[in-house]
View (cartoon, rainbow, N blue to C red):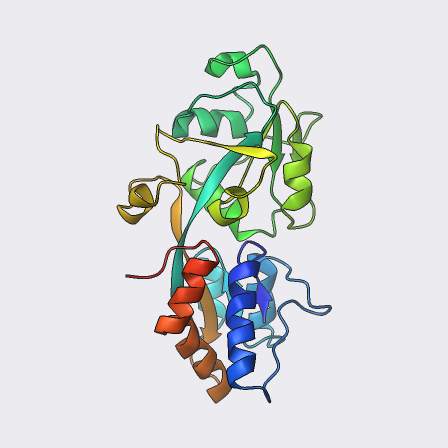
Length: 250
């Protein structure tokens, strides 16, 4: 397997449960050294037959759909959280339009959204990340991010902890709610007045950065893969979804 960094906790829980049930079928998440490479590389590895399953946090692109007979199996609901450092004096909400303008370089100072007179340091996820693609589609409406500069940094590797460390007192970034909500060094910024920490908001599909996460597999696949999918969708699997701070399927 390979794929999403943001799904690591969830996939590891399912993987452990699978290996307990089927000890003769070991699983590695991440190619080649057991470290996941992001949704985009996961799909690429699946298309090139390097892995049998890709865990991804976005839907397939048209060119990916046309290359192979792949199906997406939703296994959980998720949401992106917009985050700032805990020492950032900004404690307000942002609209989706303001977030778009920040990531396109049109809003460059916290004072422009009601905060202190501080330059906004934008920390963007790697282009390999499914969260990057989702954010670009939903927030930027498919348009381009601002180019990299001293206050706009795009990480090369799909990682989360180094991004959160970079926020300090004027940075902004995004990650999954599961990765953000238990962090003591960041604060989640409400979007359109709604916080993704509120499960009612997520369950009602009101939060604008909600999404599904998937397992991508070939249409014709092995018995071992089918059993992994069955486990992920089972009552046990959905309990693990909740344990990983994702939202179970209804």
